[in-house]
Each structure stands twice: as structure tokens, then as C-alpha cells.
Length: 375
Image (cartoon, rainbow, N blue to C red; front, side, top):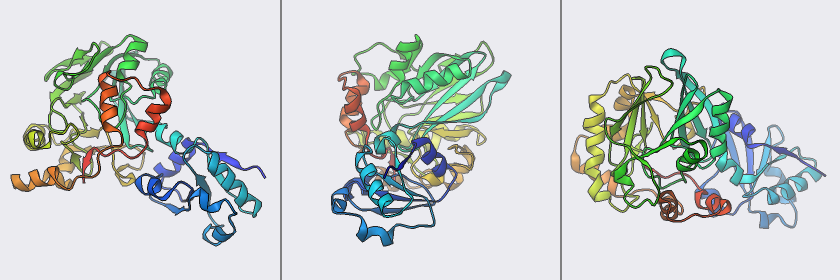
């Protein structure tokens, strides 16, 4: 019996809006425990596909009948077969189209707010990976920040709001996902900006992004000002947009702070991280709305699906911003860190332009959660 697919955008909407759903994940246990579809009101059952080859009769009593059931696997093939077996047993189930690979790549554009003179700021939420990227639009021009490798999504979105991408920025050399910034800039003939202190090994041309650099878009008063903010990397750079928003890259998150170890220099960079969080950012207005490059858990999303908080609120609630003892802070961000991102060395090499893996290899490199935060 044929079963109905569920597209990743529908799953994303259910996750963002905190709807109920039951997920039967048929990947192996280690993959499931490492990374799964997150939702505050999602329930889970993990039974590896190979344990179901002889039938699903033994798990029927674990599959609810009063709520929506979604079967998930890595690429979709195994989930279709399990969903068909459950359907043959009279259960109403669906399978995830494209599996976890499709889930990893889906982007949800959400409007953050208006800028001066009719401008707009958008956040692209990569729900399955926890990545956040941004597009500022004004009078037919756009600036893009921390873009993922799903380049056509941004290009198509810019067209949908009648804007041409003129500037593409990366806040730092990413280690947890492959940047689409350089590729997008090449496709649309935009300027690609990268902090030079992170670009010592890159093999391509870029526009150096320095502290205090200011870029205007749309011939209006909307400004994009660079603020050198090292710590996650030695070149990490934040942005103040329109004197209202603070794009923090991987330095400051809603519920945590950035880790300094992904280039193997935690002891060297921990002082920079503390200086950025406890001095540089402290000089900024508490009213600035913090927009990080990642989120860790679904609880960080607001009711409208955005990830954003005022800087003053984070200084009151984020534990990483309230450690008075320097040695305690140093110990927290250099010891007991979560595992490093999957394939992060290859991702760094890709973002430097040193290797050029094909699309399938890039997908494999990115599989798994982001791990840019201190937990």
C-alpha cells in the first residue's frame, strides 16, 4: 500500500509552532542519539530499520493512533518501506521526503523587522542544523550574512523581494558548515567580505573585513558597521545594522557563548573571547537585538520562529556572560567541551578553498548538529 510523503517545510512549521508529532526514526541508534529532528512537542521512537525487516508487528503497541506519525531515515528509502509495512497493518503514517539529508538543508526565511527608509531584515532559519543567516534589503539592494551552501535559496529570495545582492559577508571562517558566501558572490557579481585574520590560508580573492568598516545599501541611511570581536576565531567580526541589530556570528548565542577551540587554539583565544563578551559588547547599547549565527535548542526560537533577544536581556540571563572569576571562565570554555563538529577540518579546508568536494560529499560532511557553543 502506498503511503503519503511529508515535505521538510511541513515538519519545520510543526517544529517552529510547537505542534505535536510522533517520529519513528529507523536510523541506527548512534546516528539517532547524535542528531535527530528536534521539536518541543515531538515524541520519538528509535527502532533501526534492520530490526524491522521481518515485520512491524512487535512495535505496533508503541505507535500511537491518536496523533500524527512520521517515519524518518537518512535518505528516505528505508522510511518508505517501514511506513508501507505500518500502513499494511492499518496505521496512518507518513514518511519524510528526502530523509535527514533534506531536513539538514531546509531554510525557513522569517522577517525580523523593518529598517530605515522602507528597508527590511530577514533571518533564514536552518531548523535541522541550527544555522542562522541574514539578509538586509533596502531600495533594491541586499546584503547577505553567513550564508549556507544552499545558494539558490538566497538568490531566489532576493529576486522575490526585488533586490540584487551587492555584498556578502562571513563573520568568520566557519568550521561547522560549508559557507555559500563566496559562491553566491561569484554568481551575482557581489563583493565577498571575510575577516583577514581568518583568511591567512584561503586560496581565493576576497575583500578584507576590518573593524570599523561601514557599508551602505540602497543609497539610504541604512548602515552595516563591522565590529572586531575575536574569540570563537581570531578574526571573528560582528555587525551592527541600522543601529538596531547586533549580528554576533558564533561569539554570542541566546543560551550560550562561542567555543574557542575549533582551530586548536583554545588557550590562545579564550582571553579574546572574554574581552569581546565582557568589554567590547558591554560598551554597546543594551537595546541592540542580538542575532546569532546559530541556535542550540528549539526553545531558543520565539513564537514567530525568529531567534533574537536584546543584548541587555542576555547579560541578565546568559550564564556565559555572568562569570566574574577569570579562571572559572577560562576553565569553562577550554575543558569539558562538547564533541567537535563532524568533519570540521574538511569543512574548514573547503571554506578556505583548498578542497572542492562534490555536492554529495558536502552533504555528508555537514550531517549532524552544530557544535559551535560552549555547553
